[in-house]
Length: 131
Image (cartoon, rainbow, N blue to C red; front, top):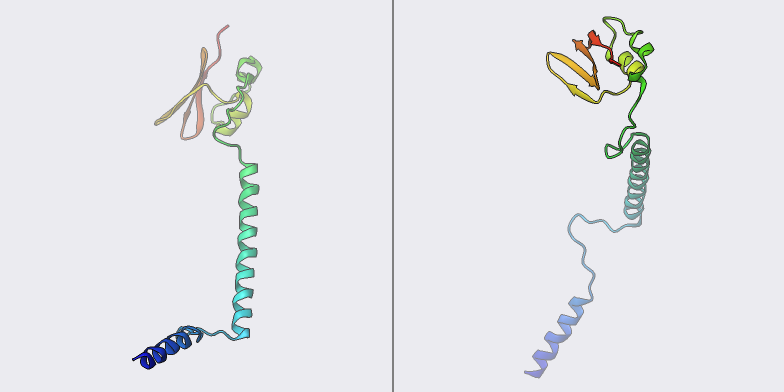
C-alpha cells in the first residue's frame, strides 16, 4: 500500500513540475518579440492620444470658469455700428455677451434697458440702452 502511495505521490510531483502550454499558444522567442513590439506600438499610440487630449483640454475653456462680463454694450457708439442683417458673431464682437438670451423663432439678447433681436441668425432689430 505504501508503495502505491509513494508511486502516486512521485507521479503527482512530476506532473506538477511539467510546464504546460495551452493549445494555440506559441512560446517561441519570435512570437514573444512580436507581441512585445505590438504592445510597445499600442503604448506609443495611447501616449500620443492622451497628449492630444491634454492639449485640447488646456486650449478649451472650462465650463466651470465664468466668462467675464463685457461692458461693450454700455457704449452707444457700439450700438450705432449695428446694421440690419448682421450675423450673431459680429453683434457679439460689438456688444459682448448678453446678460440673458431667449431663443425661439426670434432670438432675443437682453442687457439692462437694451436688447437685440435675431431672425434666422441675422440681426432684425434692437433697442439701445436708455440713459
